[in-house]
Image 1 (tube, helix red, strand yellow):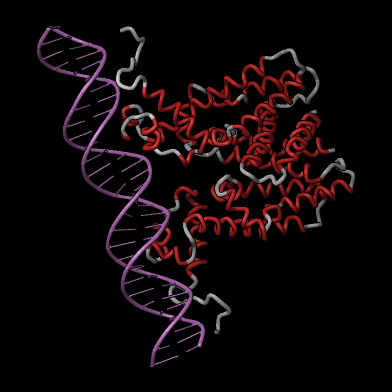
Image 2 (cartoon, protein in one colour):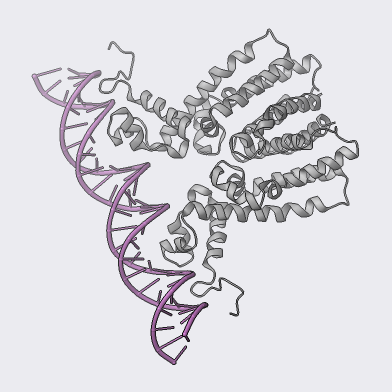
Length: 202
Length: 202
DNA sequence: GGTTTTATGTTGACAATGTTAACATTTAAT
DNA sequence: ATTAAATGTTAACATTGTCAACATAAAACC
């Protein structure tokens, strides 16, 4: 009883290793590229070892999604908590960090904000609300701050947050999915977007 | 020589039937749901009949994508050509039509504006530019009109169009992929988005 | 018209993949 | 020490995309 619980023995917490490696594979090659055989081979176990820790492939992916949300949360939280900058500055920094994440981890971004397993995802969101993990929660807080400062109109902040998130998410999606044939203009487009948003929200 | 070309004989233009049925399957059940065996079975042919008309499954899907763009074009063109309404009105109508299409055909929308086959897609876009099929081309025209009327600022319309498209695309994506936990508020969010955009673009 | 060539369709087979069942082994519980 | 539970392995199967070999209908050619 030296370990708290689920103490490893054969592989040394294979479950966590599966999640981590799966996340790395997906991040590098995309969701469709992952196969249980490849995954288990990398870890030196047999193909079906997965089934001792996950019901099936889908359950594993859901675990990766949850893990991804956690990582994203870890990445965004410090940005929001930085009170040394103005609301407008934080607004811009936030959007840029979001875009950067999408650009640096397009496959992971698609997994987290894509369509796959919408139904099943809800089980995760029950106790770890996507709203929070996404940063949408923090965005709402930021918008409320901006409302107090009189920078933007006092409208339902949830509606505002949805609109802002959609704008940045749309930009990220179109970019990483190759639908904006002007990646060189990206910086200009982003800055203009922030400008339009801040002006339009007034 | 009664038929112009590619006159059918066995199945009666199987190629077109494959594209049409494939599109219907994808529209109804999504890209991942389509299998060549199911597809061919519906048409009463054998599994490998596809390979007489397409190099492989991917080539077939690319054909469906092209067909989808055409349909989308047919849907959007009349809206843009309607000069009986003001620029602002057409702007709003356009966005709504775009959103409606995404909501009514989420699987098709994901296929047309998703990540799959980005590389290979470019071959299609050579002679049938996505920019045109998307309606982005028409959007730029609308924005130029708005600029002339002094409704919005005279900025690079391509940048403006990217920003606007991203906003609406983001809204559509988040909605159909189940990331906006307020589908009831959708109408309010959309109207507010148009409001913010028109105000911000000034 | 008859022959050849081409276009189109079919059958059988194979590799990759997710999955299950049966068996094996290591750790934990009693 | 024995039993039970957890974890891992092997063999096998169904599904799917794909290819090779074969079959047939249409078109082309003389």
